[in-house]
Length: 346
Ligand code: ADP
Image 1 (cartoon, rainbow, N blue to C red):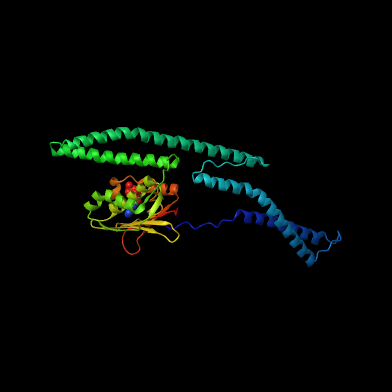
Image 2: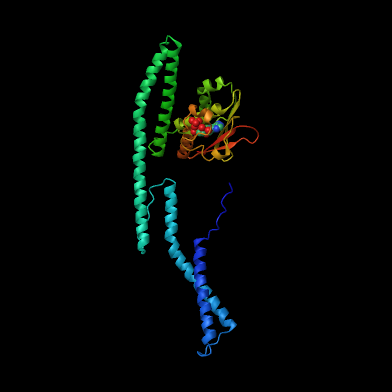
């Protein structure tokens, strides 16, 4: 299908200027016509310098009038526009000063403030609800998980029973991970998480994340290429553990059997810390690039059952909270992709 041709859009300010100029020109033409028709009787003469003078004078008056008018006219709209942009980005605390001489603007700003306040209240209710429900889910899930583990340890007699217990455990673990992720995300959103900072070795934390994922990478016979600079870091160890385990876990998950995963940790020139993890899996399709960090977004249907689409959203949100960044690029020299994390220099 052919894309629709784009309509040329006039900037409102230019549009305004054109209207004022058109009005002045019309006035000039009518005046000249009247002078040429009745000039003799009224003893008026119109010469070329007079016309040029009138034209320049009207252009000047028109431009000044337009400048002043458009400033008064557009300033409230621009102010409203930037406030709306903040709301669109999720900042519902923005309010506009309703002291205006123009009644319409006053009403508009009052309505905007009501809208922002209501949206803020809805978000608080929604976040509290998500947080409370997730919390309530945790206890029964933990109980089911505990009993299923007990059953497994009792060595079920027949294969069918063993398989049932294994499936219960697998699914409760998934549910427990999902609830844990939702709860953590909602705490990060509400800024209700206490960021306890400590000084520790970042390279050792990453090594530990890799060891904890051993079952997964050894099952796939993944070749791990780990190159970590020795870096002492001050930050939230608990939160960063989520970042490393999610990114390395994904690299292992999306790598083919006997694939290679490269994990790198470096101190950049400006003192910033760069962590990257590359794999030789399918990479990220172009259309999904801008969505992979969205909540519940999953591109690869073959791995849907192994995740919940919250891992990368959590990684992104954690890094936003601690002042870092994360991005992804498909590898230029082969299959797969590379996730790169930048941690601020402290
Ligand atoms: P999931 O739990 O599904 O892995 P994530 O939030 O971690 O959720 O990832 C979101 C989606 O991004 C995944 O479903 C997958 O489609 C894509 N993705 C993440 N990491 C990789 C990777 N290393 N290689 C290819 N695709 C990836």
